[in-house]
Length: 84
Image 1: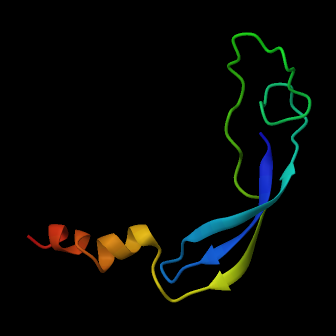
Image 2: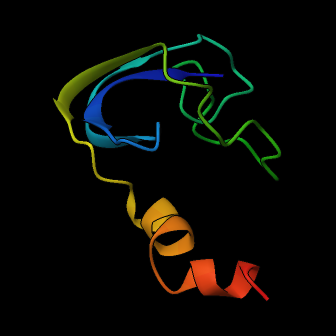
């Protein structure tokens, strides 16, 4: 399974959001569609389709704000659904 090195934003809620994919680290597996060793003519391909976890996350910006999902649930309209 191939991996990425990325740059991104670190939010006050703890989440990291990718803003740029710096490079791909090739796993060299013929069973991974992202690898250079995966055959182009792979018939009825059931090979690995997802990247593994980022091998390197470089934080280029830090904010005390929550990400969009957490802001909705903890500070926005979603918080009212929890308090019944």
